Image (cartoon, helix red, strand yellow):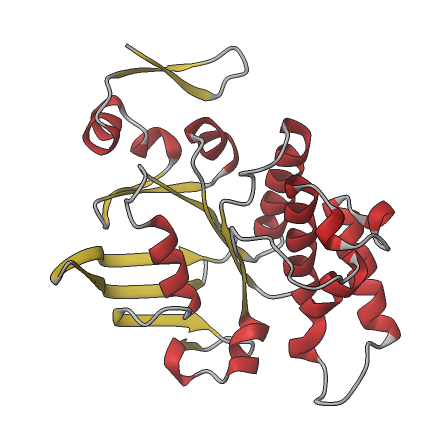
Length: 265
């Protein structure tokens, strides 16, 4: 049985709006294992990004979150130092803006910081990892360009390269294909599948159900902050579940490529 890399129980995150407390996340249980590529899907406002940020330790949700450390021990996330957590997991944000005029290479190199000493510079091994990450993400040819001059899609691939350079066994991605053309989007999914096949754990927030069904080993469907269903794409993406989460009637079928597909009635 595959090792459990992420285990969360009783997650709750509440915000105050107009003096009224509202649950953004109310998730009884979430797990992710080595070798999995898990797609978190659901309608706008379902709590997808909130769940991902909670798993990364970026927001303080109620409940318990355990992640696998570099020694193979499942530990409560609050027990990690910042460096320990950054060596165990990386988080790719939706926001790809860079406030200063860094080059692509400089931004991708930032992924190596958790592995460096306090005052050390990049080693030759670090440089090779950075080059390999840029090559995988397709941004090696623009490595000397300034990131603020790039398009949104190009910046997204740079941030993916930085996540790859961080070289962690847990990879959390928030809408990694949102600004990408079809070619780059397919490259992102290929990279995610390769990372999972190598024994890592990849969890990504996705909007496109077709992409999630085609690329992910497991899909977690959220609705109103709770897990409505979790399992294989065919098990989760049923007409009943889609109606419950999205409020639309769909017909589900297998397309000519043999993949899960749907159309709206």
